[in-house]
Length: 228
Ligand SMILES: [Zn+2]
Image (cartoon, rainbow, N blue to C red):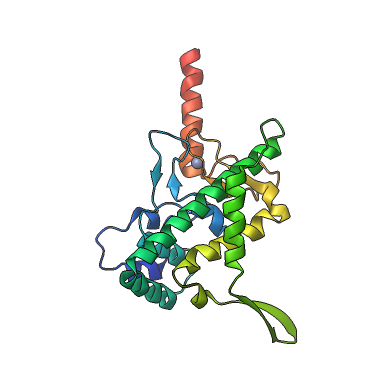
């Protein structure tokens, strides 16, 4: 787990006194699309819920932090967003809609694994994800190199949408693979963060032991003592 922004993020934001919260929230998994879900803190708590994805600048800063964009691409998008504010707003709105659809689908997948709860997928979430998936493949082309066929994606053709379309392709890879059965939602009350359980016996329950795990254990210990 890493809770510090990588160096090039600090360089780009060196003039800011405090980093936006999207650059300081812990990354509890190394799967980009799951970290994207986790840009909403305490998402299952009506009182503490907080969305750290507030602006288009947050979106590209997050993509830079996850190494989905390099500093050059970040700078180009940052300038483009300043010139085309309305388009940047629309792209942010589409990114949020995709994130919400992805979150809904991941919640359904996790519930389906328990085999106890309702397993119907939300049709609107599926439609949004499917439309995003088709858009994310529009700029792909086949090329021949190293004696083999390769699918080449041209993020430069995707303009302002490039950062979240990279996340769409990542989500598609994960959700359509066997690893989808290893996706978990943190067991701590209100947390709702998603992660991939790569433990040997598939027993990981918390997004992070340092925060949710220790807090939940302390709460259970306290409640046991109060009952005695
Ligand atoms: Zn948690």
